[in-house]
Length: 127
Image (tube, rainbow, N blue to C red; front, side):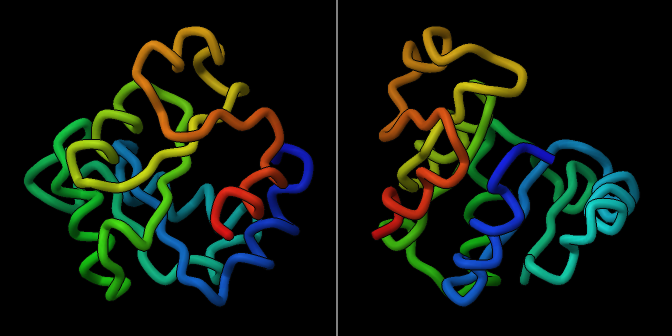
């Protein structure tokens, strides 16, 4: 797990957290459990949870519905162009992280609302 992720997730938990991934649900649940963070998320959607996957906005929209949150009240964190495209199509602000699968330079070409280099920066983004 990247530095400050657990602490940041715990701090943001009262606001409602979801996981939206294209990975299969069984793999996603196993990973969250292995990391000890499964209880921090109210909603978890895998790539096989719905009939659509990112970059379609459907999974993000469904996560928002289950959380009872409007798009303008949410921020999606992602490390791929598909994350950014899915959030934007759902009308959700997106914070792209500069670590993970893509570089900050590459992600900036997709016009995320925020670019963060440390997960703890997310606390400032959601204020």
